[in-house]
Length: 123
Image (tube, rainbow, N blue to C red):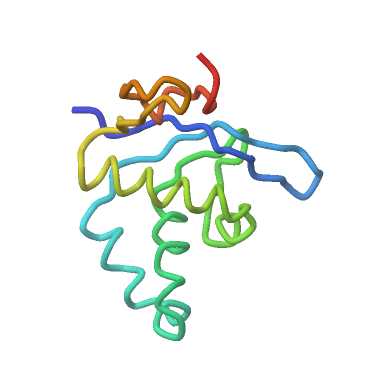
């Protein structure tokens, strides 16, 4: 059974030294991963913070950054946070990383693998 999934962030995490990290790995969530954040004071004060704490638990690596925690997730660009939230939902709820899309030029539907690392518009 596959428990880890590679991804590529749309923009990338910028570390303290200014280095941009785009590729990463997320693991499947456990029941504990979903329950522990509910006891976190930050989540109790602001329920929207739940996804930040949860992603900090399941993202194993972003580039060379292996100590991924809520503080790292907080520093992501909004588009990268949205990408990871969707990626989490896909691998944990749907069991895959494929998305059905439609070509804007010819209206042909096709599937893309979000974990494949390709950027939109690239073939």
